[in-house]
Length: 285
Image (cartoon, rainbow, N blue to C red):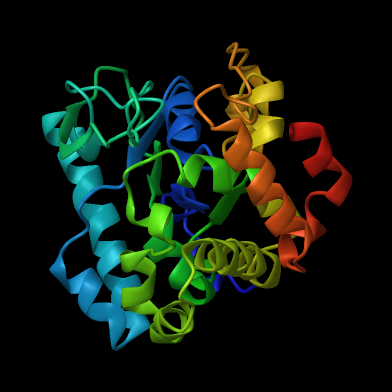
């Protein structure tokens, strides 16, 4: 993977974080924000020019570089950072924790958060976006240090079916915007579970194809280590020891639905089996 475009002291600390939707990317940002000299932003508005990069991915990369520069200035001068937040705080989860006979809804909103911790001039700035960054991963990985988070495929499918988000219908509009071939492939599939399984394979295959193995982090390792697995991104995260529950078998997930999804998943081939064994599916149901 070529990274010649970011070899300056500050640029090495402008980090792209992506991952499968509902794989723990927001939790990872929350954990990284516990580390000194780190600001991790959750799905900030990058600007219209970034989205115009649909027609020229290099323009999207340049727009993202300008975003990093602008965000650094805001943080240093005004102690404010653009990010999704809940009540002014970067959360561990962007959707409701509980539900009553309905899908869990998003509760975070776009805005700014106040940065209270001391920062050096060359602090780590991490920007997280699951869908658009995955669609642009081939280009982004040549311009920025880039990492992705994956999670057990059955747990991802169960989570997708528990939330009121486009992934519950097997669509990811932000990724489809940048990748018309993905949009066409999903549009040909009439069954939403078929779309979800296709999407799952697309995310895993993109990470496997583009990133080195050390840049792909597993949700399960992050929670089991209390966040220390994030030292792959920021070395100082090795000092983390935050108790975090593994939610792969969450009571929020419908048990009968998980069994049906497991049967569907086990009949497929996909890059997710490069990261997780078929036997591990049996252990989750």
